[in-house]
Amino acid sequence: FGLGFKVADWSEDLAREFGLDREPKRPVITEVDARSPAARSGFHPGDLILDVNRSEVKRAADVLRKLKKGRNIIRLMRGNMIIIVTIG
Image: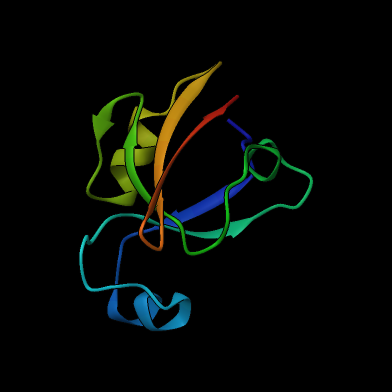
């Protein structure tokens, strides 16, 4: 939908790269286009995606499947903070 972010499955390599804890193992935002809706909504590389539109996600494919055209509500984890953002 051109929201301006890339997401990947949690991995040991990504955990090291972004300084992530071992749990929860959730999809990781790996890139954010600086001029995108994702950037304007506050997404950061290294954020974990916990759910999309109030539906839990465990893998990057789940995120892509649950995004819809129009407005999406995404719950992120950044460090020990939970952040709820609206995008789209």
